[in-house]
Length: 469
Image 1 (cartoon, rainbow, N blue to C red):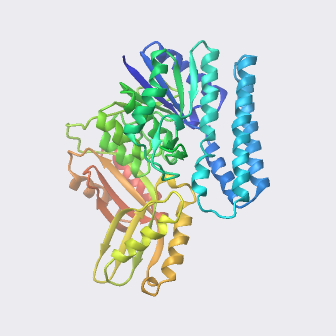
Image 2 (cartoon, one colour):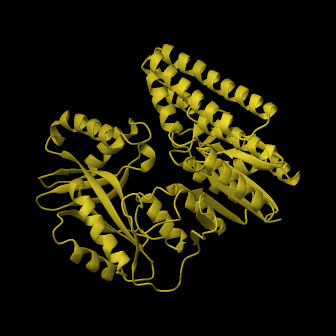
Image 3 (cartoon, helix red, strand yellow):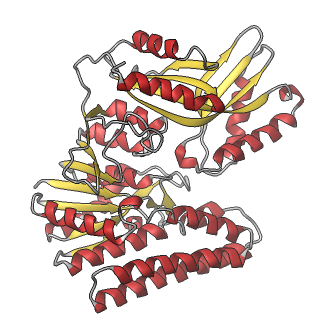
């Protein structure tokens, strides 16, 4: 029987208007598909607030984390008061929210009293998924109120991961077993499960999280394990765009992308998708749709197999923060790579993704990107950590650390990379470029610039796209 997995992001469930849209979409698609599986994120901003609360708990700042939890309680209870729920559903839902938040407060209390920070990452993961748990319960209650059999399910009972807290990777074979036992029977009974995104658990049952934006990844893994016909990602934009619509009013929807093109866009900063979600659906050839929850009639973007048709044009431009570590002297950069890896391993949610490493007779340079999953303070945190380590070693004191922006243009893999590079570089004659690279996927070309030149460079490349460059 055909199965549709739909994921709703935090921006698409945070208000009564948005939830009304979600309800309308679910009721409509329930009539079109044999089975539905819903995956939900926390309300917008909730996960960031929970991360801040966990940090305050680690520092022993009781008043700070209690204030955040109180604000979250007020926000969620105010939302359900505005929803068309019966007295029984609203009372049960309020009690559920209080239980989840009070349990979380107990964990914060234990964290604040701990003598050591060792092992705290696993404890933090046990708290920052609470936003998804509350959101799933709200939507399941709303569906039940509208005569749909529905139940909220925590993915700690479904998705088995490794123990890399903050950025865990699902174990697909073990997850298949859990889903067969705990999810598929619900579908057989025509129940619509509302599943928490972002969170999982180790094989021993310890909660983990999949990184920021991990609800997309959850939808991908669930889609593979239930053998979904399609996966739809609902957000507040019309699809994958030629550029970030928050920066460009004239950004256009890209009607179709290959899995590779979409993966590269996500990896290099496009915030619509989680970078790691593409690989599982690509392996199973499951079509992926990006749609606007407020304009469900629009087709959006369809992500599927590679496009054999040659298209000699740039499809999109995206950007992501990075750091360049460089020195004005020659020499092997292998020891710098080792220092980078060791230093970043000590920074929460960081990973070493080197984009460019080069050296000449006079200089050495290594550039790496900061994944969007690392959080808004990651660039500063990583820079401070690296500068402290480099300054403390006589052999690396000549190396400097500089924040940069990595700008990436995406094209069809079958078209000419040389032509794309020539077009872009001819538009950027006034922009000082630190480094350039062509990606191994053969559908992306990246330039590294100082951040103050990024806006102009992105504008010039997007102008090429809009004018069929």
